[in-house]
Length: 457
Figure 1 (cartoon, rainbow, N blue to C red):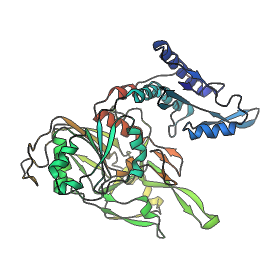
Figure 2 (figure 1 turned 180 degrees about the horizontal axis):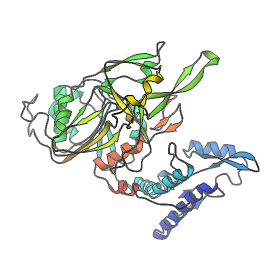
Figure 3 (figure 1 turned 30 degrees about the vertical axis):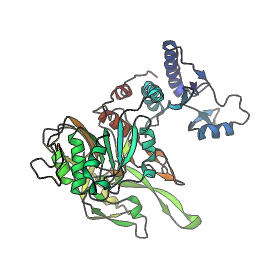
Figure 4 (figure 1 turned 45 degrees about the vertical axis):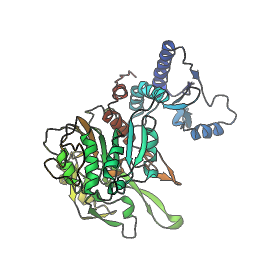
């Protein structure tokens, strides 16, 4: 194991350095197979710039710290990273967690809380024999691989992942269901084409037989790229995926609206032409910054997440246990569709008086024994062992198909949650990985991740 946060570092980060070293010493004392090498990567380097570039290319991004001494400011680089190697595979361990809007002390506090989890998680990845299988839906117009690449790469550290298409139901629906039942969870990311009744029946019967589902579905067709035209406008149009009756039976409803939130994130737009172009941040009310409700293993101790053109979710009484994991802020409202969306924001329409309802659910966890959408109905086709009530199972819904979407630079996927224009990070990936862990009944790491540590600065 190599630890890179050695040396003289700014006082605020001393706590992180001390707590990490103490944790590593505990590991060494408990397991004589663990060896730790403490490294100051820039110490004695004749070409520190080259070393910085090499470490950055390895994914060990330095943290830039502004220091003042004798009235002069300077930039220092520290490397809050460790590397674990078992002789064959290598895992990186992030020691520092960036938190939007937090002070350095608050960020160090959060980072220390995650230390044990981060190291245990890395060791877990090195020793894990992957058992659980996830099917990623690759039909019905779901997101292309390039846009979910970072999440699949991360999830692939824990689970066996494979693409799955429902197109084959038209030829052999029973075989399609049989193949789907070999998986533990079905991940559905932003379908844009309606499900046929037979496709619905296959997914429904997968759920009835205990399969888990992670739905990232939206009911309105609009994207920020649609607004990048001469007029700066586009129509937000409702779309029918033929899933409404299915969702209703399971206990929730996705509405054909858009959440407009005064607790927003920013987009960046170009102003001017040619060499005179400038990129300006613009408050974007349809991209809410959502703070976790901190009420479940899935969403505890997370930083802000970002949603894009999300819909509100209604929960329905049907005996299923429901936990609202993410909601819009208290200063939000919903707008019906069809509706014209414009990049021109009228400040008069941002009056708080018009945002009095708020707290609209955008992610819900559902657990229990679900009724089939075809209960007391004639199903599209006859299937052997057709079930009308599921065994105990779980599903989660997020009303934003882009919640899982990573940005692209030079045709290369960036880390999920990173906004390349504002250079801010959002915690969408941690939320989704936690969701997979919980849905697939792997709660040990979740419990460790939520461990509280209180520091005295």
